[in-house]
Each structure stands twice: as C-alpha cells, then as structure tokens.
Image 1 (cartoon, helix red, strand yellow):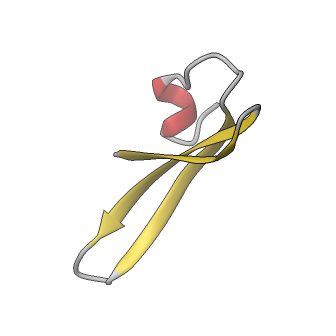
Image 2 (cartoon, helix red, strand yellow; image 1 turned 90 degrees about the vertical axis):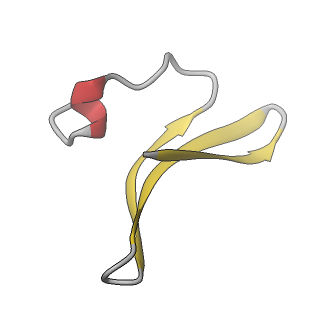
Image 3 (cartoon, helix red, strand yellow; image 1 turned 30 degrees about the horizontal axis):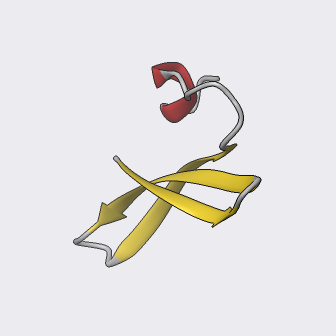
Length: 48
C-alpha cells in the first residue's frame, strides 16, 4: 500500500493505492480528505 498526498493546503487529499506490476496498472484503493481521521484497515480492504 502506498500513499500519495495530493492538493494544496487546506485541500489536501490522501490517495491510497497499489501498483500491480504484472498487469502494469495502478489500483486506487481509497481517497480520503486529509482533515479526516486516518483510514482504518477495514476501509482500505473495501469493507468500510
């Protein structure tokens, strides 16, 4: 899991993503506004 911080203050977003090397693709798992609480494991696994 990797995290990209995107935007300018005060509008920062965290983009959680994975790189799938065999498929040569980037899979975006979750996008979250920076002011929110950290993402839980359940949210990152798609159950949140």
